Image (cartoon, rainbow, N blue to C red; front, top):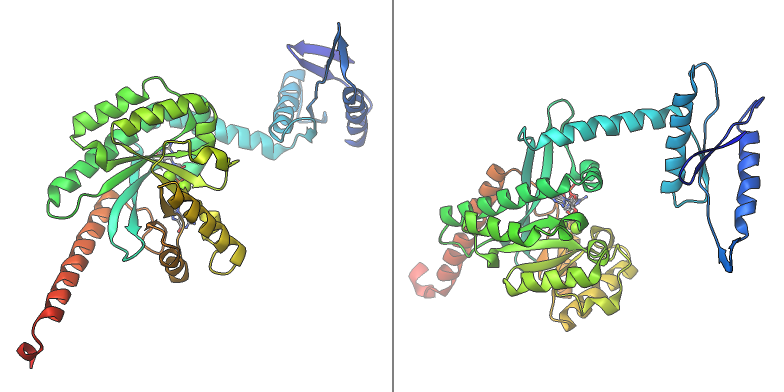
Length: 376
Ligand code: C2E
Ligand code: MG
Ligand code: MG
């Protein structure tokens, strides 16, 4: 029995089915029909079809839950690129429930104060001196513990919560950096980098929010950096470019995040108004053992420098990798070798330690320049 469930969704009910082989055979037959175009008046139109399959059994007493599960499997098939089919399984149901749970909690997380920015140092590659931090949000979930952004940013992006959450992170990071600058007035000013996702970038209030965060915290725009991935920029490139130019005029520095992972169009690179490129960890990770990865990074560095952009390498974990950064003339490094992302209190200890190192270095230099006789 074939039924139209709504819109472009159809249900097929097969009876007397013993195993999944027969619904799959049916799906394949339907797929074959979709290989040919449909004739609509004078136009030929190609359409694709994704299918989800669920088998009846004791777990179902009614049609609705069965349809719901088939629907969920169909969504999965669509997510895999479309044109295929997926068999429903129990795990899918649990996964969906877990997501729903997290989504409900996520909606309340902001008002309950469960987000916390962590800070990861960014250092000058030549001497390891601290130049700033990247703010990386964490979610302190009362039951699940510390949740990493990879597990909730995509969800927040989907349901729009990224906008208020991002606004909060921006504000918190600006205030924190301003406080550090006041507490450590004698060190060269540190900068703070804040990540912006596609949805935030396209949000009409973004500019106003950035201005508000700077004004209310008192942080100078020169000390704020914004990190944007290429894929986020490409969602609406002309608009993104316009926005970035405005930000640049306001003297905010812009970084192209996760460089090398998107569909990097090199021809675009010189047109994007950015100040620095962050080379993705996946290239940095193996550059000490894979010559092709090292060459890739080297090429990016040369290209960036030709275009007058600085380079940050992400995910530096080994001294060998840090050494390559120096050889390639990369300006900055970031990674577990220097420090993991840490709480604001721990980050403060890192500033103090870096200041002590600098003072030590100055004393060392003075000692070295003292007349040799003095110490004999
Ligand atoms: P990202 O901006 O590329 O941040 C770098 C990620 O690499 C961070 O993961 C960091 O902890 C991790 N990392 C840094 N050094 C190393 C290393 O040496 N080894 C390894 N294995 N990993 C390293 P994290 O904190 O889990 O954040 C993941 C992503 O979530 C970020 O990638 C960023 O895209 C996003 N994100 C984090 N906070 C925010 C936020 O406040 N707003 C938005 N829109 N996105 C955020
Ligand atoms: Mg980033
Ligand atoms: Mg990155």
